[in-house]
Image (cartoon, rainbow, N blue to C red; front, side):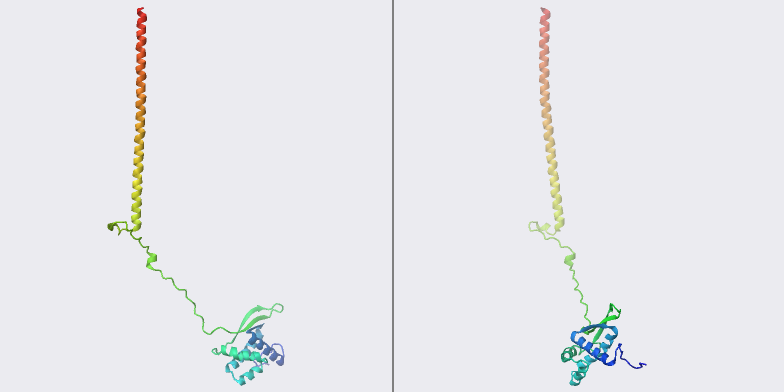
Length: 227
């Protein structure tokens, strides 16, 4: 029975398991992350957290204890010089495990083990600066009075003045058009009267001629009767 035994065997013997965990912790400290199964990731996290705790002490005895697990001098120097200083203000929780799904083949649950490099303080959400809406942009300003206007009319609003001027101009144009149409009608009537007078004179002349011809014919008829 495995009462009070916290270490998982992981399907291998003790020497094999220690060598495997030592190699995985070495790769984790060197590269910052590794991919492995979930049970092995949990065991690697236990050993890696202990190595970071030794790195925070930064003593000769701590280095010798780290050498018993990590057999690479460059990785040990990186552990004490880089990760020990980076995790100086963090009390535990130096690694995280992220599950990435089952492995193709045996369907073993895979995960990523990585060293936590995020800062302890949560970044505050940046608020967008609110646009200040001024009263001038909301209320349209009146157009400035022109210098040509008299002093009594300078206080009037620009748009109202423009509308008034446009109305006066339209009325004046309408009056001019009416005058033109009236003069045109009068001219047409005068021309019609002149034509009627001319035709009347012509008809009167024709009537006079016809009367004269009739009188001459009557005279000729009387002479013929006498003869």
